[in-house]
Length: 178
Picture (spheres, rainbow, N blue to C red):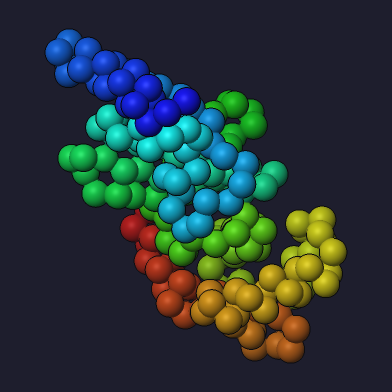
C-alpha cells in the first residue's frame, strides 16, 4: 500500500461523515514493533491512514494486567491519555481516570499499577514480583529504572518502595475528588 491509496480511501469516508453529519469508526491494527514515545506512530499502515480522520484513538494494553491506556488526538480537542481497566464480569473497558504517570514500558506500568489502589503503600520487592508472577531479578531491575525516572523511591523500611511524593499527592488528590 501507498500513502496515496491509504489517504484516498479514508478521505472518502471522512467526506461522507462530514456531509451526513455522522461519525464513522474505522478500526485498524497497531504494529507489533515499538514505535517510540508516540503511540500514534504505532498505527499500522502509512501516514495516509492517520491523516484524514478528525480524531484518532490508540488503545495500548499493559501486559495481561487488565489495564490499558487510551490515547486520543483530534483536530478540535487537546490530546489526552486515559487509564482504563477491563471488567471481566461485564466484558467491557471501564474508565479509571486521566493518565497520571508518564509513558513507560508495559512491564514498568504493571509495577506502577500496584500502587494505584493505595498511593501511600510501601511494597517490598518480594511482594511485587509475587503479585506479578515475574522473576525477582527482572522486577529489581525495573524498580531501579522507576527510581531513576523519579516515579518510585525507597520506602521507610529497607527493601520497600513507594511512589514519590509528586505521584502520591496526585493520586491522593484524585481520591479526594471522587
